[in-house]
Image 1 (tube, rainbow, N blue to C red):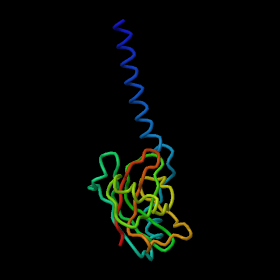
Image 2: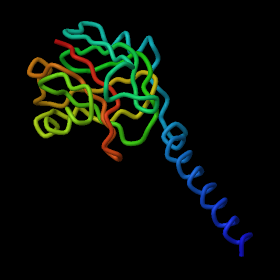
Image 3: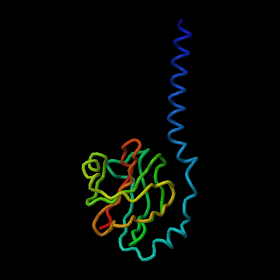
Image 4: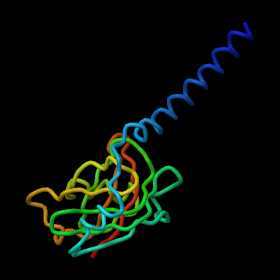
Length: 156
């Protein structure tokens, strides 16, 4: 009986570790190729706003972080740097800087979703029609699947 219990416990632990690794590694394995630094720089020309993601935000931790430069042109938002890999990331524009999940959730419905972030080193996203970056003050990366704050920066 003791062997059966030990067997079930060890295999349950192995299954849990495997699942967690899969959730973490799958987005990395299926991510498209990130734009090059040259592509990001080219699309950042004429930026009207800029900001910087840092790892020291209250809502960031060792699994949820971003580090690098954000540039906003009238038509694109570009990022040169790295963000922690994860599933179902979205980029939002918010009317105020939020630094954690608790600060983002109350303003999420009033924010503009720019689009999905599918790469973890550099990205370029087209700003949707009808969204004016000048009407907002900050950029937020949010994980929709797990409701997790990743990173944010003010740009004006």
